[in-house]
Image (cartoon, rainbow, N blue to C red):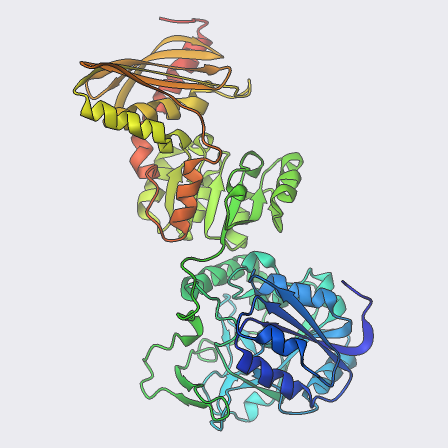
Length: 581
């Protein structure tokens, strides 16, 4: 992998997943291409005979096939293809593109050869068939970061045949200087598994590194838009919106520097596509200009999985959150921690491509569906909620409760709290037994954990013991009065629904005991922690469209209000030198 590039050689990197009928035509069109080139095909788990066809293919250009049994996404697998390529130039070409002009590949390479300041070039993309409609005359952007394909759905004209600088170009047909691609780190794999906008991000990194991109309108290829990959099992439209917000946060200065296009240049012209006969495809502009054309964003229903294979999660204060990365189908794509000594090991442990000290910046700049916040970082939480992400808060991270509650109730995102014992099956069973056994008369809860000496035991353990009381009795805790307090142990009396009981938290060997007395005597549960917190399971389930976690911040906010008052009371007692009252 990463062989020394061969001068003048073009490596065509083609990503495929099923759609053999398109792949066959794309490779056949490359058979007539002039110049020195090789073809690297990355097969992402095709199940339609693609593997057999590629194994038996006799192609006039050197052909390398990299077979994978799964689909991890376009960014990662294009990087794999690029790492195996030997060419001085990389031509990323979708398997639904036809290169009809024999000299097209050679002409693009000549542009890069003639101008060392160019990092990448792209051709004119036309719709297939005889319509003469533009699919993409280069990638365009407004100064405020609105992106789109130039000329989509318009009849091809002289303006589409020109050469000009551009901000970005689609990976449907994008030629990049191999050395430049390596220099900027290739495609950002945090855009996977639905690799929308990863091409824009790559091009912006090239421009930020001082390289230019050129649109070469004199070279044209045909593109069956919206068929490659199709991101099976995912709703692409919200992913597209989320990724474009990330791009604007990352590359505001690049977009502002231009070259700029107007919103009219980037208008999404609705088109009607009929690819039922690939030899005679039909494409036309829809008669109703207001008609919805979401074919580019639609998943293939015939192949869609029951749920997306991966969800992307960011960890803020990530050194203390190994649990989420252990869940199947979870991809940790970014870690933030102000302490570099904790940050870098956490990023390595999770295989995260992004590691930043600023949690808010991480949430702004890295695409994800969810954020786990384990250390106080109100800015990161508020940013995530405004972006519509789901947030799982560690107990220590609930520091600015009024602001967090207001955001959780008003922002499009959703916020829950990591109260792992709330999901313990024995706690649920105890609550049912108490309900079935008549009116309770009192309760007692004790929780010991080997928490660090510099941590506040009430902040660490108080939410769990009070939440256990609320879930077993089915009523909220309304008041807590401290009876005894040392830095290592706190005993208090709590009131819940008219009942009074004792709650105790402290440092020591792990132990969690909940007991309730009533007419039928004492009912108790000695709890053992599950291997993975149920809060994480519920969080990931919610990311996949499941029910909201039972520990939503707006639902448990009252509990944290009580804990906050309890902490203040204990702190005042300890400051006064008292050990009880």
